[in-house]
Image (cartoon, one colour):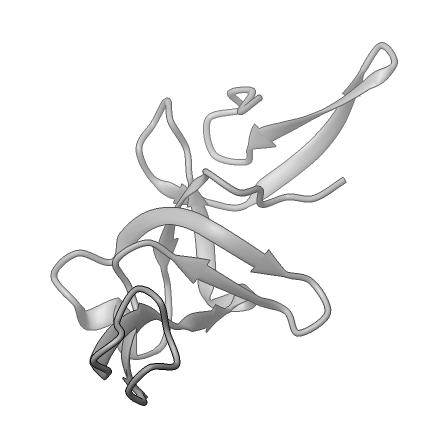
Length: 108
């Protein structure tokens, strides 16, 4: 079972984005093969787009996109205690459930 899912709120624990004022955001995309995640509003990178190549920007220009962050540099934020925490997995009947390692609250 995955410990992080799309839509989870995460906090950056190490790296360049840790020192930013807002180092929390929601996961937009997870790339398991590379071990990286894209977090909304963090790691913004600029891309240069040529004229006529993109329907959204037919005149071209410089566009900001969300870059990726190493999966090991983010921790899930518990919705109950509002702290960055590690995630555990326990089985309840036939289903696996994620839980906060600090307050033992079930996440989903």
